[in-house]
Length: 141
Image (cartoon, rainbow, N blue to C red; front, side, top):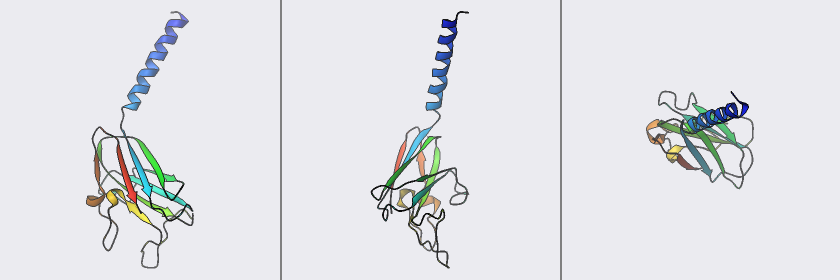
């Protein structure tokens, strides 16, 4: 087989693989606004189950802050039900600081701008569904 034919076959196969990877899932864009300044980082976690919500992340990332806001994208997320939680690590110590009662001292938020009452937000308030479309969640702190 000639080199040209082999090259064409490899090219076609690589394009097929790239196309298949593009269709593996959707993107979840998370826009965080109203941060208290540009100091520190924002830790963002994506959860795919009510039983693991706020305990075991499905995906996570860390973002820098510019103009008191930031944006992250979770790529190739399969169809399903998800929730997002995040916190602003203002002092850059890689953890969410809390007082002696366990109440957070740093800003935090969840998808759908869910708020907790006497505790963290609930899955039912923070969850959202992805079904063959990319999604944007804007969370205002």
